[in-house]
Length: 340
Image (cartoon, helix red, strand yellow):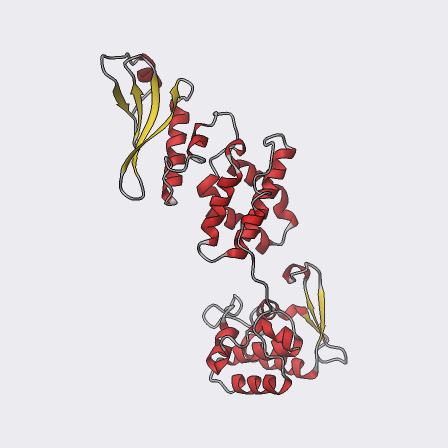
């Protein structure tokens, strides 16, 4: 391992030589006396490569190690730091310049309390999974539209087109924050939107013919399945709420079940529109709720998971039930809203 003293006192020789540090990083001491940080590594194809970082003392030992780690992070994504010239130069960032990940986490910290917990989790998870490994260690000044598009192409290539659009929007909002706080001059994510693959819009598969819907319900309810799953599907089609709202239904959300106006009050934090939703309950819906008591009235949720009763029913349970009844690709749980 190198030290500042060893680097500073290294003298030129008749021929250039190397002073090794760790992880492939070395200081190349030239015959002329100049000293240059370089890094040896193997490309994704297995070819030995050398990445030139910056001269010493313009880049300190500490900064050289950070640059080495950044190059390794890029390489883990299957990217050759030398081949991607738009990314590699950013490894030469000045020590004082804040990196994208730090600014992004600051932006997230200012907003997460305004979001529903699930959305906040989705935002930071998408950044940690798809963005930070590629550009998290780069300063905003070194991130170009081409670099952003490279990040988004990785997301598109796994078929997550809509996710790529959401991530682009989040990157753009982070750059707007950086511009407002005088840490960036432009938003490279704003100009790449037209270059992304379009999102195919269309409604969920749903049966909307009344007779066919009755036949589907009959076939599905005749399936051998756990009673809680069957009752969850029945409450779903009797109320036309979203599947997640049924799965997460809690006993304390139901009121006046024995009265003349029974209702289900879904709390705002469980709603997509982030506001309380009141669902009037037909007599058949009340019967479903009462039928659930032997199964779940000792748990918080109406529809407990059969293996872990303190958490709700598996999100795929109703979908699997419909698939086994022969409706794969023809009707999904969310499709009951279209049926309704």
